[in-house]
Length: 231
Image 1 (tube, rainbow, N blue to C red):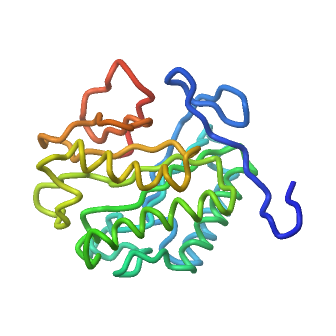
Image 2: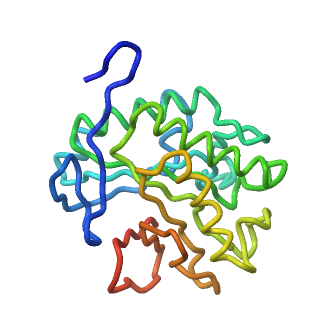
């Protein structure tokens, strides 16, 4: 329960011995990628209205993105950018994200919150803007006590044709991923995170500070770690 102006905390997602837990209990996760669930108020509401149907079919994990998921036909670049060019988290997008996370929590669901994508990374002014985006997202999740989440800091890190920001591509990928993680964890130490590599490139799916081992597409399923195939 909340006290005064403090928001109520959701159930907490944790990883214990490479297995997922929610609200202090082990949970088996079956997910659905909903990359554009934050596109507009109407689209978010449509997802909320379908959560009961999803849960009835065993889905208890949603993947949503603040920035740049594929917009689909006819314009794959038409997806949302929930960050301003200087890295500020747009308030309307933050509000939609909180609504979706809390509605998911009410149904015993977990939400993977994705931050960056090669489709919109070029909109940032510079590395300082990226750091601000990381820190503002962490502050938002921690401050609003949204705990039934884990984070994909960058989807398709090192994308060969789309990723423009040097911080989000090779070389020195392990150090760059670790830096992104350190920025986030300094603000929200209890939220688990990872970075999803671009499949078929020479960037690794492990790095110092990784807690969620994110893979995509036809990448081999590793034998170790808490592994999530996000796409």
